[in-house]
Length: 196
Image 1 (spheres, rainbow, N blue to C red):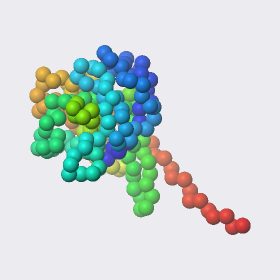
Image 2 (cartoon, rainbow, N blue to C red):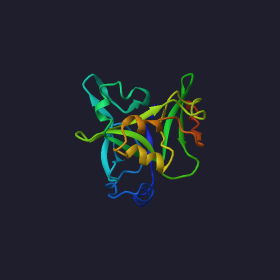
Image 3 (cartoon, rainbow, N blue to C red):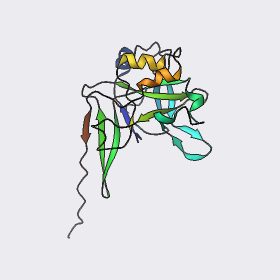
């Protein structure tokens, strides 16, 4: 679930959209994969470059996602609840399976530009994870989960408001109710061997 997203907006656009007090360092534009360094937005509205995926001793793979429904129950995520962050993205990817074929699908709101996923950060190790929830109706045919897409600046401000306890901030951890644009890549046709 949400193992890749893209960030193509300019630094100026990110500063304007999220009211950043400190812009992100130079970022590589395009697809972001687990363990890549990418900007997150902290409650002070400063952008920081963190790596995507929490490292734990019980799993060799980084934990790139955290289920919204069990954040308070899981010992891995409970200590990070005071370190809420925004993950700026322009779209995210899921893969729909049909038999042995996987279809890469890009999902984003219909208006172009950056939006925010809800995240948790580990500031001591400069790592972050993306929070997931049940899918919106338009995402359900593609995947059984989706990242929590915060519904605009008010929801983003609540998520970053550290004066709110987690249970109040968590009210925004739900499937996105707005429109989403779901665009599926068509797989390349199989290569035919030369007859000569």
